[in-house]
Length: 249
Figure (cartoon, rainbow, N blue to C red):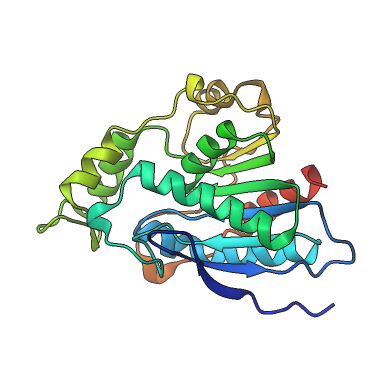
């Protein structure tokens, strides 16, 4: 069956987020809808093509899929000056509700990359309708995350980081962010994909729910280096899409 072009739209209030919904094109419609949570700044650009391929693969397997930009990022509305981790957590919740409404599904598969993975994990801990979660290089420490980004080319003047606005208020908010085992009480299956993080650190974070860990499969992927050389890590894309298909109805 030929795939349909994803439907672009805005959702949420008071600051609408931009999303693209992929209708299921597989032979059977699934009872679960997938929500793909992107990251911030340079990373959101680097993840775009990979997430499009994840969405296409899951759509072909019968899933509805919603990709979206956090408020103040990408094509979403909003001024980054007033963004916060709490606001972005609200965006993920709104995206889940929108995906469930559009698809008529009864459960959700959350897939996130970097900061979006951390937000997806927090959303999964808050809800009973999350069937599974895939975390691609989740941010465990906001301060370490900012240090990593700052170390690529050094700090820039004017409240920027790697060419994207990073006002002091948002920087401080991200720096104070951290995931810990007590933040998460995930009972659903969890996939963690990360070539850099200590596998035991990830396992301690997710606990027994982490039923699959593919450490090292993204070893060729660089999140914030030369953006003109962006490649799609096909092994990671396949692992994430296959995980969602395997663990969701």
